[in-house]
Image 1 (spheres, helix red, strand yellow):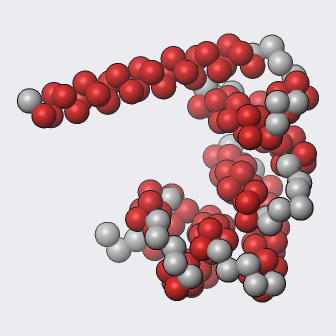
Image 2 (cartoon, rainbow, N blue to C red):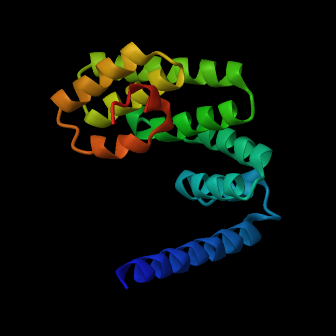
Length: 171
């Protein structure tokens, strides 16, 4: 039946993901953060996620903090905000509320600066909504979501899964 087929596909995909996770973890197990960072910040970010998913939370946070320091580029902060928000989420998950709040407020400052300078990319607004949501600032988060729609955000359907925006959901 179709349901059996879908369940089988899910199980196969889950098994493949577990194998990839194990391989990545084995690859980076003995590496220092510096060695991981040598591969570039995109690769290092993926390895940090592998560490997090494997339960190595503190190591994932250390690597993500290191990535954040080398990731500084002349690009818009919006291009880096996803990793910053993810680090804030990790801080919240391990009870580091003060660190998360500082990081989120810093991210909001950079993103608002860009918006005020004319960078009106919907992703900037989505990141702002997420950061405000993570801080429990629901009115500000909703304002940013409305602006994101005004500026052409087409992927709001995916935000149904964003935990930081759960208080704003009507569906």
